[in-house]
Length: 384
Ligand SMILES: *Cc1c(COP(=O)(O)O)cnc(C)c1O
Image (cartoon, rainbow, N blue to C red; front, side, top):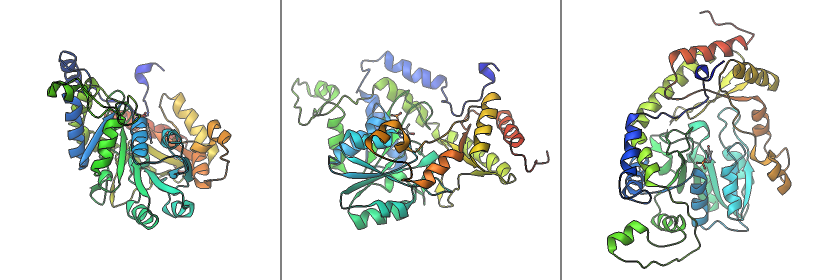
């Protein structure tokens, strides 16, 4: 099978207007931390209805900024779901704090509020909910738990730009949330990330932290006509460039249209899987809109999932598995985390599969994908 016939599990959408936007910046005076960064931040802040948005050079940097600038430090515990990309928990380690893994709901694959409650200790400083696949978590329950226990409610919304819970964006429901603009995510800057928050002090700290702990940037000093700057805290170079933000801005104008297509694809998948007895799509809440970064399904058992993975890869369909519980990675095993902490996340990992979903996926590609799934689902054949 040649490359052009392959269906990836996800793929960016780059069109001429994206290319033009990037070329315009290359011809301008500012390649980094210029007007496009601010314009991108303001546009995303509007889009997610947050007071402040700070763009950085990756989703991982965004997580580190959010935690460090909220004062998470050695001795603190931060609760994260077991089924996320490693970066969610790694950011806790960057702060010398301790990740505590909470289990997930077996139908929605989202962090389970009851298990969060069970894992709270006097040292718990924050919870990072992850809007797995693009579906917002139960922010009513999580907010209640955080209020009762005096800890921050954060989200890693890398999958969920555009998603809503009871008509609110995730940014409106948490103390701070992060996004990733890696190419497979809902919107891309090539690489990039962003923190959205309504806390002005947190926003101010993150602005400094992303640029060495220095209180002003080149552009601001150029406008003021001064060379002086003060380094107030120890920060990093987590800056994103104007080149990347021009791409992000151009992408943002089409995000709603892309999400519509993702939802259409998901609806077709769901209608078909309703008729298959051994393929169970992620349960969707009626009060949520789903960004469908991933379309995740549970298979009957591990053997069927593994067989399906092989067959689909052989047919040129880029299926994937999201995620191995973070604490089962060898680094976390060496830190002393052991199997059995989150039994649902562990058994889900054995049975789960992400099917292709991306805005430019064609009807033929959907049909082909469904044909291959159906051949592997022996019990019932759908009449054509
Ligand atoms: C992609 C992703 C990240 C990391 O984002 P980068 O931009 O690649 O650093 C963090 N958390 C989750 C859940 C992700 O999917």
